[in-house]
Image (cartoon, rainbow, N blue to C red; front, side):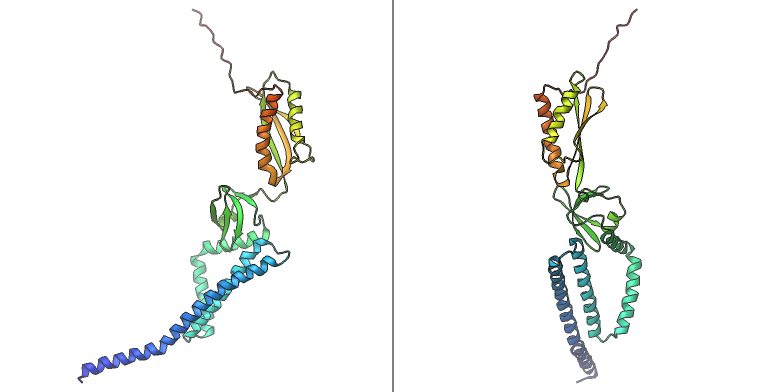
Amino acid sequence: MDKQQEQVIGLFKQFLDLALGYGLDVLGAVAILIAGVIVAGWARRSVLRILHRAPGLDDTLEPVISDIVRYAILVFVLIAVLAQFGVQTASIIALLGVAGLAVGLSLQGTLQNIAAGIMLLFLRPFRIGDYIDAEGLAGTVEEIGLFTTHLRTYQGIYLEVPNGQVWNRSILNYSRVEARRLDIVVGISYDDDIDKAQAALLELMTSDSRANAEPEPQVMVKELADSSVNLNLRCWAAAGDYWSLLFDLNKAAKLRLDAEGISIPFPQRDVHLFEKKN
């Protein structure tokens, strides 16, 4: 055996020793990582089930608490994987601190979303199931996470919005208050009896059980428009009945005025022609 063959055999033995020495560590680290991911997912689902059965706990907090548990387990898994390769715990903590600082500087937007999510959970401008409109970002709230808020639009489309965008906008919450005011403008002709029209439209609202008795429904003269006298139907209804009552009253007002012989005029304009004199 010549000298070159001896060097090759020596290098192969060194590689084999390294493979045997670190191979078990690598396999152990992979096993810990896979088991940790599985346990983290199982823990998240378990916490969700427990919190869902807990009396008095707001549904808004359930996904956030379960996510915190999951991420905490994953951090311990990462430490265990690094320890598998002989990294000291103190070094791991120092490394995580430096890495956290670096990530924080590079992901300021992400941290802003986390801070915004915490503020949304703490101040609670909306909850799960509320319909909101944050300056165009509208939908029913399905989940408030650490990073994003999940909405379902009125068209049934899934919408995921970063928490920072929701927090930095004016939020209209259509479900927060139990009752909403409903206003419908109906125009009648200048030749029609205003009192008769008001009485008919008022009876239309008071006879509908969805319209609240307090405050009392009203029909007032809103304005004297170019082509019509505009009457305003106003009543209060439960937030859940708002849209159905609005659509039904629009139709019923037209049918009732037709039955009373009161017209809803089209926009019209009087044109006067003057003959030019020579």
